[in-house]
Length: 325
Image 1: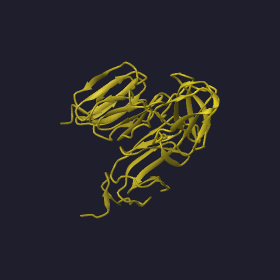
Image 2 (image 1 turned 135 degrees about the vertical axis):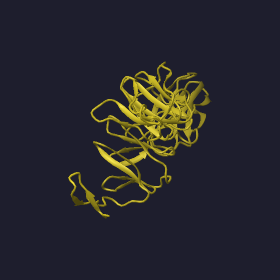
Image 3 (image 1 turned 30 degrees about the vertical axis):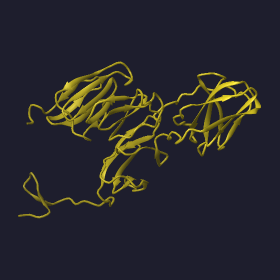
Image 4 (image 1 turned 120 degrees about the vertical axis):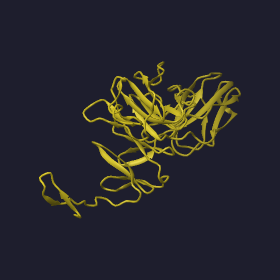
């Protein structure tokens, strides 16, 4: 009867190897790493590993985090409640919120605007130039030689968009930090508005990146961002309804998607294309069990019938089905 001793294949005894505490924590989970860094959750805080620097506190206890690294080095994470981006060692919300309220827009005389209807919309602007979703347009009738005054603007930097006289298309008119702005002359027409009706990407229990889009999945389905704009989500079209998603793994030719009882393949380089879900396996995947295989473009996950390998072209192969009950 030996304690702290290993019996070797040669029939000899040697002292059992010990362990050294690297970093103390409380209820640690969600350890994740790549070549650029490693992170984990301790209690209610997201920390770096092995340094233990706190990047985000106040997390919902016990909620696993999902991570996805973008090509520019930004790291996105979500736990179903929050969706944030780590950039330069700082974790912040992934996308600006739409301004809470529409601006107050009134018209008066004393300017040089032509008589007619105008529409006004506002969007917030981050320090790096990222823009929020824009408010729904407010219409106002301006008398001849009139003025438009926009007030109750949100704090911080914002873009104001205005139509031409009796126009339908909003164009960038000015970028300002003021709480009130007056248009006494017809503003120059800048870029056409792009973010009308957009919202920040919704959080999910899974976050992934497929080519030029950010993906999140929750209990209702799969959401995707606008192309090359991870901070914009169009709720009118950026959604695939599929309740109970347990796995999302993008590869070169498409995306593997699984629920608890089915595994699907969504082919195509762009999730917003015309491809439809096709069933691959009559069983699903265990939550948080997927991984990317080193030195390969393939992925793998645990199913109720053993480990499954998913190739980059959409071929799924169960390695253990014949041996696992």
